[in-house]
Image (cartoon, each protein chain N blue to C red):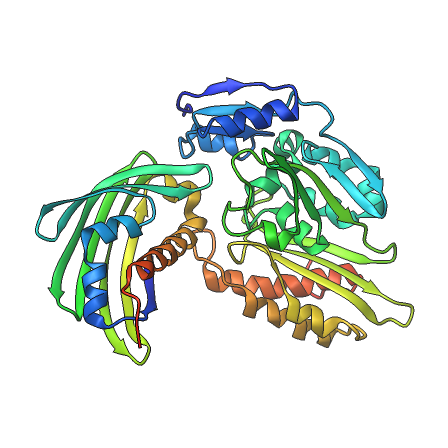
Length: 291
Length: 148
Protein backbone atom coordinates (compact mmCIF):
# COMPACT_ATOMS: atom_id res chain seq x y z
CA UNK A 1 0.00 0.00 0.00
CA UNK A 2 1.05 3.57 -0.41
CA UNK A 3 0.94 6.31 2.18
CA UNK A 4 -1.49 9.16 1.76
CA UNK A 5 -0.17 12.48 0.51
CA UNK A 6 2.33 14.27 2.72
CA UNK A 7 4.70 17.22 2.57
CA UNK A 8 8.36 16.38 2.99
CA UNK A 9 10.83 18.56 4.90
CA UNK A 10 14.56 17.89 5.27
CA UNK A 11 15.94 20.34 7.84
CA UNK A 12 19.68 20.41 8.41
CA UNK A 13 19.62 21.58 12.00
CA UNK A 14 17.77 20.63 15.16
CA UNK A 15 16.46 24.17 15.51
CA UNK A 16 14.99 24.11 12.01
CA UNK A 17 13.35 20.72 12.65
CA UNK A 18 11.79 21.97 15.87
CA UNK A 19 10.47 25.08 14.14
CA UNK A 20 8.75 23.10 11.41
CA UNK A 21 7.22 20.71 13.96
CA UNK A 22 6.06 23.57 16.15
CA UNK A 23 4.41 25.45 13.31
CA UNK A 24 2.70 22.56 11.59
CA UNK A 25 0.30 20.44 13.64
CA UNK A 26 0.14 17.84 10.95
CA UNK A 27 3.91 17.29 10.97
CA UNK A 28 5.58 14.16 12.34
CA UNK A 29 9.28 13.56 12.90
CA UNK A 30 10.95 10.85 10.81
CA UNK A 31 14.06 9.18 12.23
CA UNK A 32 14.72 5.55 11.18
CA UNK A 33 11.15 5.18 9.93
CA UNK A 34 10.98 1.53 10.97
CA UNK A 35 7.82 2.06 12.97
CA UNK A 36 6.39 5.12 11.25
CA UNK A 37 6.71 4.27 7.57
CA UNK A 38 4.96 0.87 7.73
CA UNK A 39 2.12 2.58 9.62
CA UNK A 40 1.96 5.23 6.92
CA UNK A 41 2.00 2.60 4.20
CA UNK A 42 -0.97 0.94 5.86
CA UNK A 43 -2.52 4.38 6.26
CA UNK A 44 -2.90 3.77 9.97
CA UNK A 45 -0.96 7.00 10.38
CA UNK A 46 -1.55 9.85 7.97
CA UNK A 47 0.61 12.79 9.00
CA UNK A 48 0.24 15.72 6.62
CA UNK A 49 3.95 16.40 6.72
CA UNK A 50 7.19 14.59 7.57
CA UNK A 51 10.21 16.23 9.12
CA UNK A 52 13.16 14.06 8.10
CA UNK A 53 15.79 14.25 10.85
CA UNK A 54 18.40 12.21 9.03
CA UNK A 55 20.25 15.21 7.63
CA UNK A 56 20.88 16.75 11.02
CA UNK A 57 24.53 16.28 12.00
CA UNK A 58 25.82 15.65 15.49
CA UNK A 59 22.98 13.52 16.85
CA UNK A 60 24.58 10.12 16.44
CA UNK A 61 27.26 9.24 18.93
CA UNK A 62 28.10 6.72 21.63
CA UNK A 63 30.52 7.77 24.32
CA UNK A 64 31.34 7.40 27.97
CA UNK A 65 30.95 10.52 30.07
CA UNK A 66 31.07 10.86 33.87
CA UNK A 67 30.04 7.32 34.66
CA UNK A 68 27.32 7.19 32.03
CA UNK A 69 26.99 5.82 28.54
CA UNK A 70 25.72 8.72 26.45
CA UNK A 71 23.96 7.88 23.17
CA UNK A 72 22.66 10.39 20.66
CA UNK A 73 19.03 10.14 19.57
CA UNK A 74 19.80 9.51 15.93
CA UNK A 75 22.26 6.66 16.64
CA UNK A 76 21.29 3.58 14.62
CA UNK A 77 20.32 0.53 16.67
CA UNK A 78 22.95 -1.46 14.74
CA UNK A 79 25.67 0.90 15.97
CA UNK A 80 24.65 0.24 19.56
CA UNK A 81 24.46 -3.49 18.90
CA UNK A 82 27.98 -3.69 17.48
CA UNK A 83 29.66 -1.07 19.66
CA UNK A 84 32.68 -2.38 21.57
CA UNK A 85 32.16 0.33 24.17
CA UNK A 86 28.56 -0.72 24.83
CA UNK A 87 29.49 -4.39 24.91
CA UNK A 88 32.24 -3.68 27.43
CA UNK A 89 30.43 -1.24 29.68
CA UNK A 90 26.77 -2.15 29.43
CA UNK A 91 26.42 -5.60 27.86
CA UNK A 92 22.71 -5.91 28.65
CA UNK A 93 22.09 -3.05 26.22
CA UNK A 94 24.00 -4.84 23.43
CA UNK A 95 22.07 -7.99 24.19
CA UNK A 96 18.68 -6.27 24.10
CA UNK A 97 19.30 -4.49 20.79
CA UNK A 98 20.07 -7.83 19.13
CA UNK A 99 16.41 -8.74 19.55
CA UNK A 100 15.09 -5.66 17.79
CA UNK A 101 13.36 -6.69 14.58
CA UNK A 102 15.61 -7.87 11.80
CA UNK A 103 18.98 -6.61 10.66
CA UNK A 104 17.60 -4.12 8.09
CA UNK A 105 15.37 -2.64 10.81
CA UNK A 106 18.38 -2.26 13.08
CA UNK A 107 20.43 -0.67 10.32
CA UNK A 108 17.93 2.18 9.93
CA UNK A 109 16.07 2.30 13.21
CA UNK A 110 17.33 4.78 15.79
CA UNK A 111 17.56 4.83 19.55
CA UNK A 112 15.62 8.11 19.79
CA UNK A 113 12.93 6.89 17.43
CA UNK A 114 12.37 3.67 19.34
CA UNK A 115 12.19 5.49 22.66
CA UNK A 116 9.82 8.17 21.31
CA UNK A 117 7.58 5.46 19.83
CA UNK A 118 7.13 4.01 23.33
CA UNK A 119 5.85 0.57 22.42
CA UNK A 120 5.55 -1.34 25.72
CA UNK A 121 6.61 -4.56 24.00
CA UNK A 122 9.76 -3.02 22.56
CA UNK A 123 13.23 -3.97 23.71
CA UNK A 124 14.71 -0.52 24.22
CA UNK A 125 11.98 0.84 26.50
CA UNK A 126 12.17 -2.40 28.51
CA UNK A 127 15.95 -2.43 28.94
CA UNK A 128 16.21 1.34 29.52
CA UNK A 129 13.65 0.96 32.30
CA UNK A 130 15.86 -1.65 33.99
CA UNK A 131 18.90 0.61 33.51
CA UNK A 132 16.99 3.65 34.80
CA UNK A 133 18.34 5.64 31.88
CA UNK A 134 17.71 9.34 31.53
CA UNK A 135 15.85 10.43 28.40
CA UNK A 136 16.73 13.91 27.16
CA UNK A 137 14.61 15.86 24.73
CA UNK A 138 14.74 19.15 22.91
CA UNK A 139 11.81 21.11 21.51
CA UNK A 140 10.14 24.49 21.25
CA UNK A 141 10.03 24.77 25.04
CA UNK A 142 13.71 23.91 25.35
CA UNK A 143 15.51 20.97 26.91
CA UNK A 144 13.76 18.50 29.17
CA UNK A 145 14.77 15.25 30.75
CA UNK A 146 12.79 12.28 32.03
CA UNK A 147 13.31 9.03 33.89
CA UNK A 148 11.67 6.00 32.24
CA UNK A 149 8.66 5.90 34.58
CA UNK A 150 7.95 9.55 33.77
CA UNK A 151 8.40 8.99 30.06
CA UNK A 152 6.63 5.74 29.17
CA UNK A 153 3.08 6.68 30.08
CA UNK A 154 1.00 4.24 28.03
CA UNK A 155 0.85 2.66 24.55
CA UNK A 156 2.78 4.94 22.21
CA UNK A 157 2.16 7.72 24.73
CA UNK A 158 4.86 9.92 26.21
CA UNK A 159 5.00 13.47 27.57
CA UNK A 160 6.60 14.61 24.30
CA UNK A 161 4.90 17.65 22.83
CA UNK A 162 4.53 18.09 19.10
CA UNK A 163 7.96 19.65 18.60
CA UNK A 164 9.88 17.61 21.18
CA UNK A 165 12.57 15.25 19.90
CA UNK A 166 14.50 12.62 21.85
CA UNK A 167 18.06 13.90 21.47
CA UNK A 168 19.98 11.75 23.93
CA UNK A 169 19.85 8.78 26.29
CA UNK A 170 22.13 8.72 29.33
CA UNK A 171 22.63 5.29 30.80
CA UNK A 172 24.23 5.18 34.25
CA UNK A 173 26.96 2.57 33.85
CA UNK A 174 26.25 -0.62 35.78
CA UNK A 175 29.03 -1.56 38.25
CA UNK A 176 31.84 -3.43 36.51
CA UNK A 177 31.02 -6.61 38.41
CA UNK A 178 27.27 -6.34 37.71
CA UNK A 179 25.57 -9.29 36.08
CA UNK A 180 22.78 -8.85 33.60
CA UNK A 181 20.75 -10.62 30.98
CA UNK A 182 17.97 -9.92 28.52
CA UNK A 183 15.57 -12.55 27.21
CA UNK A 184 12.37 -12.49 25.27
CA UNK A 185 9.86 -14.94 23.87
CA UNK A 186 8.28 -14.39 20.48
CA UNK A 187 6.57 -16.54 17.87
CA UNK A 188 9.46 -16.12 15.47
CA UNK A 189 12.84 -14.48 15.78
CA UNK A 190 12.42 -10.82 15.00
CA UNK A 191 8.72 -10.65 15.90
CA UNK A 192 7.43 -8.39 18.64
CA UNK A 193 8.11 -9.84 22.06
CA UNK A 194 5.25 -11.65 23.72
CA UNK A 195 7.15 -11.06 26.96
CA UNK A 196 10.60 -9.54 27.42
CA UNK A 197 12.68 -9.45 30.61
CA UNK A 198 15.73 -7.36 31.45
CA UNK A 199 17.66 -8.18 34.62
CA UNK A 200 20.57 -6.38 36.27
CA UNK A 201 22.10 -7.69 39.49
CA UNK A 202 24.97 -6.48 41.66
CA UNK A 203 26.48 -9.13 43.93
CA UNK A 204 29.14 -8.22 46.49
CA UNK A 205 32.21 -10.22 47.57
CA UNK A 206 30.13 -12.01 50.23
CA UNK A 207 27.77 -13.25 47.54
CA UNK A 208 25.00 -10.96 48.71
CA UNK A 209 22.84 -9.15 46.19
CA UNK A 210 23.19 -5.42 46.78
CA UNK A 211 21.13 -4.19 43.85
CA UNK A 212 18.47 -5.90 41.75
CA UNK A 213 16.60 -4.53 38.76
CA UNK A 214 13.97 -6.50 36.88
CA UNK A 215 12.02 -4.95 34.03
CA UNK A 216 9.21 -6.59 32.04
CA UNK A 217 8.06 -5.72 28.54
CA UNK A 218 4.88 -6.81 26.80
CA UNK A 219 2.81 -7.29 29.96
CA UNK A 220 1.23 -3.89 30.35
CA UNK A 221 0.85 -0.57 28.58
CA UNK A 222 4.38 0.39 29.66
CA UNK A 223 7.48 -1.56 30.69
CA UNK A 224 7.18 -2.55 34.36
CA UNK A 225 9.77 -2.80 37.10
CA UNK A 226 9.02 -5.75 39.36
CA UNK A 227 9.76 -3.88 42.58
CA UNK A 228 8.56 -6.56 44.96
CA UNK A 229 10.91 -9.07 43.36
CA UNK A 230 13.76 -6.56 43.52
CA UNK A 231 13.14 -5.96 47.22
CA UNK A 232 13.01 -9.68 47.92
CA UNK A 233 16.40 -10.24 46.32
CA UNK A 234 18.26 -7.26 47.72
CA UNK A 235 20.30 -8.02 50.82
CA UNK A 236 20.11 -11.79 50.24
CA UNK A 237 22.28 -14.52 48.84
CA UNK A 238 20.56 -15.60 45.66
CA UNK A 239 19.50 -19.23 45.79
CA UNK A 240 17.35 -20.96 43.21
CA UNK A 241 14.49 -21.01 45.68
CA UNK A 242 14.69 -17.28 46.25
CA UNK A 243 14.77 -16.64 42.50
CA UNK A 244 11.62 -18.75 42.10
CA UNK A 245 9.84 -16.75 44.79
CA UNK A 246 10.90 -13.50 43.15
CA UNK A 247 9.72 -14.63 39.71
CA UNK A 248 6.21 -15.20 41.06
CA UNK A 249 5.91 -11.45 41.55
CA UNK A 250 6.24 -10.99 37.80
CA UNK A 251 3.04 -12.94 37.25
CA UNK A 252 1.29 -10.87 39.91
CA UNK A 253 2.29 -7.49 38.55
CA UNK A 254 1.75 -8.37 34.87
CA UNK A 255 -1.50 -7.03 33.47
CA UNK A 256 -1.34 -8.15 29.85
CA UNK A 257 -3.90 -8.15 27.06
CA UNK A 258 -4.88 -11.15 24.95
CA UNK A 259 -4.44 -11.08 21.24
CA UNK A 260 -4.12 -13.76 18.63
CA UNK A 261 -0.40 -14.24 19.30
CA UNK A 262 -0.89 -15.05 22.96
CA UNK A 263 -3.57 -14.97 25.62
CA UNK A 264 -3.25 -12.83 28.73
CA UNK A 265 -2.90 -16.01 30.80
CA UNK A 266 -0.03 -17.22 28.67
CA UNK A 267 1.74 -13.86 28.88
CA UNK A 268 1.34 -13.78 32.62
CA UNK A 269 2.74 -17.30 32.87
CA UNK A 270 5.63 -16.44 30.56
CA UNK A 271 6.41 -13.34 32.62
CA UNK A 272 7.10 -15.63 35.55
CA UNK A 273 8.94 -18.32 33.57
CA UNK A 274 11.13 -15.82 31.75
CA UNK A 275 11.91 -13.81 34.87
CA UNK A 276 13.32 -16.97 36.41
CA UNK A 277 15.23 -17.90 33.25
CA UNK A 278 16.66 -14.43 32.84
CA UNK A 279 17.74 -14.25 36.49
CA UNK A 280 19.45 -17.61 36.16
CA UNK A 281 21.08 -16.62 32.90
CA UNK A 282 22.44 -13.45 34.49
CA UNK A 283 23.92 -15.50 37.32
CA UNK A 284 25.26 -18.21 35.03
CA UNK A 285 23.08 -20.85 36.67
CA UNK A 286 22.27 -23.97 34.68
CA UNK A 287 18.78 -24.19 33.28
CA UNK A 288 17.46 -27.77 33.38
CA UNK A 289 15.73 -29.08 30.29
CA UNK A 290 16.26 -26.07 28.05
CA UNK A 291 18.78 -25.36 25.30
CA UNK B 1 -13.46 -8.94 23.19
CA UNK B 2 -15.24 -8.44 26.47
CA UNK B 3 -15.54 -5.04 28.03
CA UNK B 4 -16.63 -5.12 31.64
CA UNK B 5 -16.22 -2.68 34.43
CA UNK B 6 -17.64 -0.27 36.91
CA UNK B 7 -17.34 3.42 37.61
CA UNK B 8 -18.72 5.20 40.65
CA UNK B 9 -20.14 8.69 40.42
CA UNK B 10 -20.70 10.86 43.43
CA UNK B 11 -24.32 11.61 42.48
CA UNK B 12 -27.78 10.03 42.67
CA UNK B 13 -28.91 7.54 39.99
CA UNK B 14 -31.52 9.93 38.57
CA UNK B 15 -28.90 12.64 38.21
CA UNK B 16 -26.37 10.26 36.66
CA UNK B 17 -29.00 9.05 34.20
CA UNK B 18 -29.87 12.57 33.19
CA UNK B 19 -26.26 13.53 32.61
CA UNK B 20 -25.11 10.33 30.89
CA UNK B 21 -27.95 10.11 28.42
CA UNK B 22 -27.84 13.72 27.36
CA UNK B 23 -26.55 13.71 23.76
CA UNK B 24 -24.48 16.86 24.20
CA UNK B 25 -22.73 15.40 27.23
CA UNK B 26 -22.18 12.16 25.34
CA UNK B 27 -20.58 14.02 22.48
CA UNK B 28 -18.34 16.01 24.84
CA UNK B 29 -17.39 13.03 26.95
CA UNK B 30 -16.69 10.49 24.21
CA UNK B 31 -12.99 10.88 23.41
CA UNK B 32 -12.54 12.02 19.82
CA UNK B 33 -16.24 12.47 19.14
CA UNK B 34 -16.65 15.14 16.50
CA UNK B 35 -20.32 14.70 15.84
CA UNK B 36 -23.28 13.01 17.50
CA UNK B 37 -26.52 13.94 15.78
CA UNK B 38 -29.91 12.51 16.65
CA UNK B 39 -31.62 10.84 13.70
CA UNK B 40 -34.55 9.36 15.59
CA UNK B 41 -35.32 9.00 19.32
CA UNK B 42 -32.34 7.16 20.81
CA UNK B 43 -30.55 6.82 17.47
CA UNK B 44 -27.54 8.92 16.60
CA UNK B 45 -25.20 9.36 13.73
CA UNK B 46 -21.63 9.63 14.98
CA UNK B 47 -18.25 10.69 13.69
CA UNK B 48 -15.30 9.85 15.90
CA UNK B 49 -11.54 10.30 15.60
CA UNK B 50 -9.98 7.41 17.48
CA UNK B 51 -6.38 6.53 17.98
CA UNK B 52 -3.19 7.16 19.88
CA UNK B 53 -0.07 9.08 18.92
CA UNK B 54 0.34 8.98 15.14
CA UNK B 55 -2.14 6.15 14.67
CA UNK B 56 -5.45 7.90 14.20
CA UNK B 57 -8.51 7.19 12.11
CA UNK B 58 -11.92 8.72 11.53
CA UNK B 59 -14.84 6.40 12.01
CA UNK B 60 -18.36 7.16 10.87
CA UNK B 61 -21.27 5.22 12.22
CA UNK B 62 -24.31 4.89 14.43
CA UNK B 63 -24.93 4.86 18.14
CA UNK B 64 -28.17 3.58 19.58
CA UNK B 65 -29.61 3.78 23.08
CA UNK B 66 -32.18 1.02 23.53
CA UNK B 67 -34.20 -0.83 26.17
CA UNK B 68 -33.97 2.18 28.38
CA UNK B 69 -35.52 1.88 31.82
CA UNK B 70 -34.93 5.11 33.67
CA UNK B 71 -32.91 5.35 35.93
CA UNK B 72 -31.91 1.70 36.18
CA UNK B 73 -30.48 0.39 32.92
CA UNK B 74 -30.11 0.74 29.18
CA UNK B 75 -28.37 -0.94 26.28
CA UNK B 76 -25.86 0.95 24.24
CA UNK B 77 -25.07 -0.22 20.72
CA UNK B 78 -22.62 1.26 18.29
CA UNK B 79 -20.88 0.54 15.06
CA UNK B 80 -18.56 2.52 12.89
CA UNK B 81 -16.18 2.12 10.03
CA UNK B 82 -13.33 4.06 8.58
CA UNK B 83 -10.13 3.65 6.63
CA UNK B 84 -8.32 1.75 9.42
CA UNK B 85 -11.13 -0.73 9.94
CA UNK B 86 -14.47 -1.18 11.58
CA UNK B 87 -15.80 -1.61 15.07
CA UNK B 88 -19.05 -2.89 16.43
CA UNK B 89 -20.08 -3.27 20.01
CA UNK B 90 -22.84 -3.34 22.53
CA UNK B 91 -23.06 -3.08 26.27
CA UNK B 92 -25.69 -3.30 28.96
CA UNK B 93 -25.29 -0.46 31.42
CA UNK B 94 -26.76 -0.60 34.89
CA UNK B 95 -27.00 2.17 37.43
CA UNK B 96 -26.89 0.92 40.98
CA UNK B 97 -27.39 3.09 44.02
CA UNK B 98 -24.51 2.81 46.47
CA UNK B 99 -23.33 4.46 49.68
CA UNK B 100 -21.10 6.87 47.85
CA UNK B 101 -23.52 7.64 45.03
CA UNK B 102 -24.13 5.57 41.94
CA UNK B 103 -22.19 2.61 40.56
CA UNK B 104 -22.37 2.47 36.78
CA UNK B 105 -21.77 -1.16 35.87
CA UNK B 106 -21.14 -1.98 32.21
CA UNK B 107 -20.95 -5.35 30.57
CA UNK B 108 -20.45 -5.69 26.86
CA UNK B 109 -18.55 -6.97 23.90
CA UNK B 110 -16.75 -5.37 21.04
CA UNK B 111 -15.57 -6.58 17.65
CA UNK B 112 -12.82 -4.80 15.80
CA UNK B 113 -11.90 -5.72 12.28
CA UNK B 114 -9.94 -4.57 9.31
CA UNK B 115 -6.42 -3.22 9.20
CA UNK B 116 -6.27 -1.80 12.70
CA UNK B 117 -7.28 -5.15 14.15
CA UNK B 118 -4.59 -6.98 12.22
CA UNK B 119 -1.70 -4.63 12.84
CA UNK B 120 -2.66 -3.10 16.16
CA UNK B 121 -4.34 -6.07 17.80
CA UNK B 122 -2.35 -6.20 20.98
CA UNK B 123 -3.04 -2.56 21.73
CA UNK B 124 -6.76 -2.49 21.11
CA UNK B 125 -8.01 -3.58 24.52
CA UNK B 126 -5.56 -1.21 26.13
CA UNK B 127 -6.73 1.69 24.01
CA UNK B 128 -10.39 0.83 24.71
CA UNK B 129 -9.64 0.85 28.45
CA UNK B 130 -8.00 4.23 28.10
CA UNK B 131 -10.95 5.64 26.20
CA UNK B 132 -13.43 4.30 28.75
CA UNK B 133 -11.41 5.87 31.55
CA UNK B 134 -11.39 9.22 29.74
CA UNK B 135 -15.10 8.92 29.02
CA UNK B 136 -16.01 8.38 32.67
CA UNK B 137 -13.64 11.09 33.84
CA UNK B 138 -15.18 13.53 31.37
CA UNK B 139 -18.69 12.52 32.48
CA UNK B 140 -17.87 12.98 36.14
CA UNK B 141 -16.96 16.61 35.39
CA UNK B 142 -20.51 17.09 34.13
CA UNK B 143 -22.13 15.59 37.22
CA UNK B 144 -23.83 18.07 39.53
CA UNK B 145 -21.59 18.97 42.47
CA UNK B 146 -22.85 17.32 45.63
CA UNK B 147 -23.59 19.66 48.49
CA UNK B 148 -24.07 18.48 52.08
